[in-house]
Image (cartoon, rainbow, N blue to C red; front, side, top):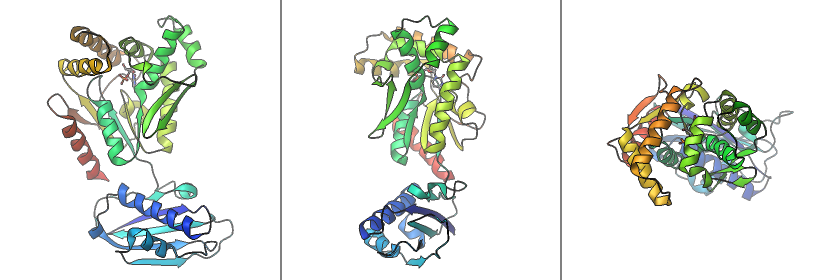
Length: 335
Ligand code: DC
């Protein structure tokens, strides 16, 4: 038997807000934990004394949780306690570990157990990282953080400023004054450079190669890693890159390292380029890819390397669906 804890706050003491908050919390608990109906023993809810308009158990019943034994109780009024708070405990029959869910104003209540889920996907260019990461993030209902896009944005800035990327001081000045933000729209990452959405412009072969060069500078990496850790600490996300499992999130619970033969990777990238109207022969793509591999693997700081505790997946002979299903099954074994 396992107990899943959760809590949330309601916007106001009225039926509509209580129903919304309870349903949102239970939906999240069920979806994140992939709870099956037959595993659930009972759902117990409690509320702070300032909630008077509706029993949370009634809200649960009306929100689609009528099948389970439900129980509501009133918490004593405690000075300084969180206002308008609803707590829940779902008892379920399972051995696997569970994830506790704290939403809205309740997020700070139990930082110790409401941990965010981070998944590290590392590997060389063309190994399928971004496609797989996007699928995983969508299936798990969490964000996809494309860390390569950040290095690409710096490369684009260098190109726009006609900067000599081999000159450390010049690149440092650019990085010190960098206005780079990552935002999300309908689950898709938007990379904003100087306030402009450059998500498309950072995908050219020229930017790809230059990103590999500028990402070798320590000051570039420090700044990007800081930003990546900040995002990952706050929100559950799939991060793809070269050094996520080794350097950005060394304590991450889920680490995967994707590989594939260089020829297979070049073929994938070539097809991708054609679909985007980027003109580059297969031979050029392969040459660029090998050059990037060399730089990414041989730079002094945080090179492309598989973490000792990462699950290695050779995607050369696997379909996208096969890779995604395999990784999801590995994640589900643990959560
Ligand atoms: O994944 P990508 O092709 O978009 O990455 C572009 C370059 O950025 C890649 O050649 C190496 C660098 N990079 C990195 O050094 N560390 C990361 N976490 C992600 C990308």
